[in-house]
Amino acid sequence: MQSITELAPSQKIKVTAHQLESVSVLSFKSGNREAHSLGICRAEDIKAGSLVFTSTLADTQKAIAGHATLIISLEKSLDANLALKADQAIFSCKNIHEAMAAVLVFFDKKTQRLPNKIAATAAISKTAQVGKNVTIGDFAVIGDAAIIGDNTIISANVVIENLALIGSHCIIHPLVVIGSGCQIGNRCEIHSHTTIGSDGFAFYIDKNSKPVKIPQVGIVVLEDDVEVGASCSIDRATLTETRIGAGTKLDNQIHIAHNVKIGKNGRITAGFIVAGSSEIGDNFLTGGSSSVTDHVKITNNVVLAGRSTVTKDIEQPGAYGGYPLEPLKSAMKTIANISNLTGMRKQIHEIRKHLGLNSESEN
Image (cartoon, rainbow, N blue to C red):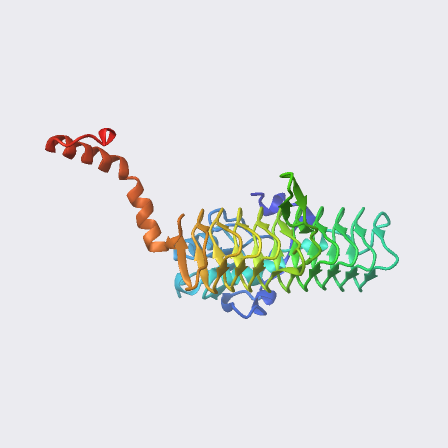
């Protein structure tokens, strides 16, 4: 990590103690209310003049000694006897991740990556509706009757096809394709190389054993506050809609097939695959590389362990894992037992031999 002194002036982001006092999840504990930082660093890599989060008393003491100027610490990692330097301030929080979510907003300048203008090289249909304060990058394409909401950022080389609707305060990263008629809610973020509204994989086999495509005429709907990672594909529905519920977050390299419905506030990690027409409830949480087969229904508040596979309905909330799928505790026992199978087989062979029974190969 670069030190503060190595950063170019354009990279230095000043954050003040006064700004932190406005954050509801923080409490000012002691120090200089005029203190400020010009960057952020990790607790294990303290830089002078930086802001740092600490979760132990030892890390808090290290941050003070390393001359971090703004320190955000878990309440339990504070000590009344901490001696701050004149230009330092310390804040407490009850949850480090909650504090990071609130504070890192000050350092997140993704909305400033492009100039706030519409590039001359962008191809925008005369029938498209573009809201106020919209940014459209070089070589972006906005199709006929497309609608772009206020304060949305459309990065370079994005394609928004005819009749698509993008809400307000969205960020669409470079090289994203949003298909015809698809609808993106407010405050959504879609990362590079993702396609929203690709055709579903739907074919029937004719009398000559030839697969014949069934046209996919539905759409994709992302509700408000959805984030989609890089290199994802979300297929349009055959007839109606594929829908991702409000607040759901998709990691990178995820495939959502046609007609799928995913509920609100899900957190779906990399490599997840769900086949067509499955329905997943609210607060769905997955480990990496898990999958769901077609026409499956999953209730609310389900957790899948990594590499799990769902092949039938899950009707009860809880944690599950493995293939075939089991409640997570049982799945962990199954995994542990697999490593013993070779030894057990040898033991059974020795027992059969001692008893004079035929070998397995002879039965």
